[in-house]
Amino acid sequence: MNASPEQRKDAVDAIVDQWAIVRPDLDTAAMAVFGRINRLSRTVGDRQEKAYGRFGISRGEFDVLATLRRSGEPYTLSPRQLSATLMLTTGGMTGRLDKLERAGLLRRSPDPHDRRGLQVSLTDEGLRLVDEAVGAGLAVQAEALSALNAEQAGQLADLLRELLSGATR
Image (cartoon, rainbow, N blue to C red; front, side, top):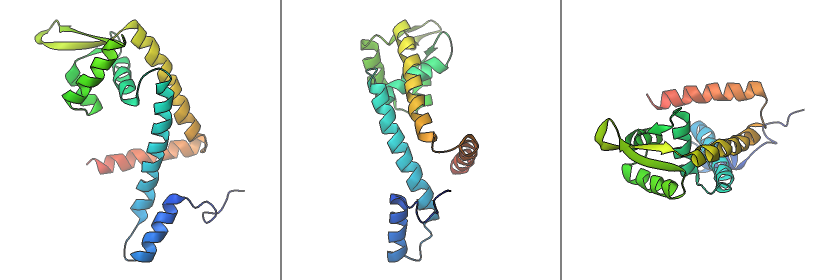
């Protein structure tokens, strides 16, 4: 038998309850949703950071490698494409690329189609590492999602897709 909502109160409920006392005029329904989204994102993100750390990379560096990997063979994109996909400034991207290049996980080379441009490509070691790291990151996410059954997880994904779509209009 499932616990009643009253028995399942969490830290976000406590915050919402406090606001209800000091500002009963506020509608805190959105706070209840986004407070949990933010806490969940932070908690799972921290766990993923630990998982990626076992491979000697940060979550941000994983994102660079994963973006190259998802692009398909030859696992090559321009720094501009990477920056746009990851929503990073070129300065932020340069720092990540420098570290990953020093580690032998990617290489930068001249773009054969644009004399002024560069291409960023995964090395064989980068490909091997990102393929292992993505499994570790997915395991963290699956563990967090195990609190829900498959139908609930699908419903949540659908609801979050709708919420994201509405928020980005």
